[in-house]
Length: 264
Ligand SMILES: [Zn+2]
Image (cartoon, rainbow, N blue to C red):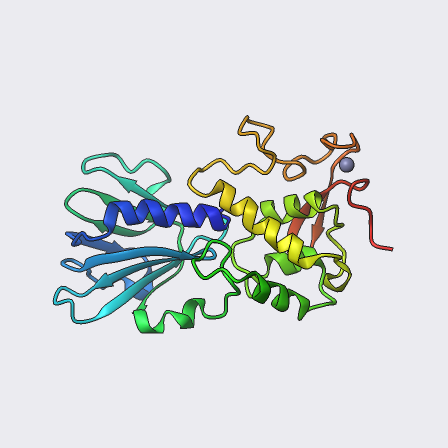
């Protein structure tokens, strides 16, 4: 499932393949852009904001700057193929966008919210996002302020709300709360050290930037990369208590009932 670091990695892979290149072809398999043809356009930049991907392009005359936006949500992905390579990552019917250059082809599968907007209007798509954990303008104080603005919300839901801070997905949410000994149902107002939690969120995502295996334990070995996420009924790595799994809001949450006692 894409978290902020996965999207950051994806943007980097796309940037390496596309930046500076002129497109030799494009194929949009989404109704809103079905007739769009970006042949001759030049890719100037690929960036991520939270879980949003922004591919910036210039028109053939370089007269205008545009942004191709996509959101990966739970299941979207971009892959880069060499010319002639089989597009094997996902079934063909999931392809939404194809961008070709002389040396590579970027294929976007199961993308959401695909849109082409003037770069000056990017804020309409990503302006609601809180500070980006992996952005160059990461602002921990602003993230804490936005979280504290919703004191009655559970910390588990507040961490996933990209308007507070952008980049935390379900895996990091669960792991962060375990590492800080915070029960997922704790109200934001009752979390003792929001700033410390936010600093840890940044450190965890930053540590996994540049690799595809996400680990919060320091181990990259299969089955050892998380403390609680995906470990229902398995023993807590600290205390041996069985890890619990429960729906909380729209998403499942994993936690250790002993290391993360319920708020009193
Ligand atoms: Zn425990």
